[in-house]
Image (cartoon, rainbow, N blue to C red):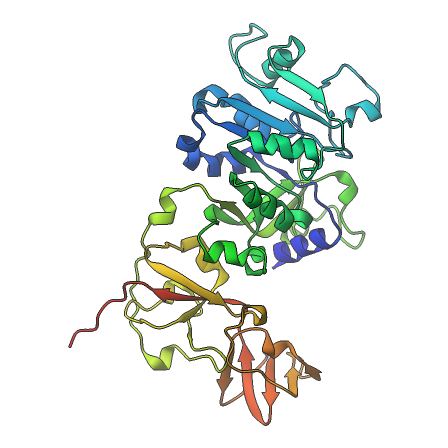
Length: 397
């Protein structure tokens, strides 16, 4: 899908300035309100006056009952200081100075009868809240930012896509609670999958295509017709009525270790196991379940399900056994001298078949990639989670 390829391209190009819509944040964080009362929240990848994460927590400071809100800005942010002047400096260099914002009170400082970001800015100017320049560049791995991390109870942010795995590892190493945005495909990596398997991390409420504001410098490729809005949107680009550029990225989800109601919701299973409907893998002791909705209620063995199953995973109902990746070590067979036949019929020597779940077939599928090993035909699935139903329905005798 276009959104997935857009995300992969962004990660490869180290394009990490993707700014989350306030609506996206509100839709997710409304499920976590009980966790924030009396807590210190850190947004350590967010320019305070440009980030909607900071805006959400600042404007809901009293409603959530926060103790403290901390945000940091990193050097080089292309939009830092473009909406509100913080230090009274107008130079480009000063606007991009990394700093930390510490909020301990939010009220009507301007006397207009309500509370908005102008009040938050005024509370910095009059000294009721603190706004201080950082010594370093604001990188989340720097000493001063790690000290702020240790002070926080919960972290909420959209970390750089290219550094997501390192960022999450840092939160785990510092024993922090968090709710952060990332790419669901990272769930299949060596760094992230063990955390999911061991129930140290799980998915939040929302996943799928998500719209982010991006700097104009990211641009739209020249081969696109800029006036064809529908074609641009279908390829992940949106230009709004104010001329701002947005990117629609696929496979976006929320990662958290805060307990939420969704995590305890039981999947309703309606299918029963029939061997002819659930082929077994040739290289894993498991059956193929191509859709989570098709998980059989009465199967006690290991099942391979799509990564999207994580969005429905209840640790009381299922157990994650492993993943169909070579590095995990559950494969019981490898395939030497394999030939890949792509959709156009082109043949080539590859080793791809050894990384993933494989199904042996009598007849090669038409118009799809398949493999040949010693005159036998095989197809390969996308990465599969290997799971077991903890309480399968007992078949009637």
